[in-house]
Figure 1 (cartoon, rainbow, N blue to C red):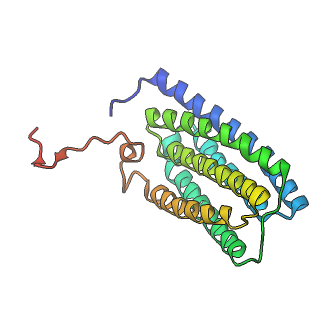
Figure 2 (figure 1 turned 180 degrees about the horizontal axis):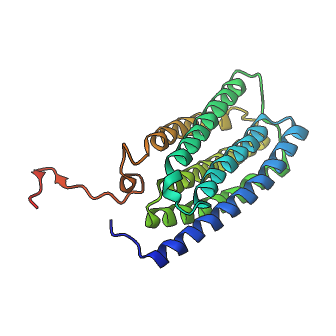
Length: 224
């Protein structure tokens, strides 16, 4: 991968700090609204969504901490570890919460505030994820790309929450969001494992950011 010129690197680092700040701010507001609405409606799905927002803040804060240093690359491994742990924590909570709902111990309740929040998040989160992923790829930052995946998972959770609340409200299907949540939990485990392994000693940054060019094709190694 061709190294970016120093001026471009500075621009990209500022963009990362900007998108991380926006992500943290939005998720703090999202967590407060979701946890409050979830408590009022006794909705485990909404409370879980609020806790996911807290995990998202932790992941974004790890990237903000990394890029606050003069040499962000020196903090790359630690930031990736924090992001990986946040993925695993998210997967564990979502899986347990979904299992409780499927066994009938918890049931998501109708919440107009929750439906509106999920709809807004479904619009905002994919854009933030795309912007950070694109910038992280150009910069060659594995932690920024990993954090963008965390934001993308928040988008999936928004879709699952919205579908679950709507189906529960309109059709009484309390199990719908739990099934979707279990799929998301599996995806979170996969992304967490990739982030955990994504340090410079084991996996090239280019491989994590999707920039790695393979030197081998189906017929064997190419001659250089």
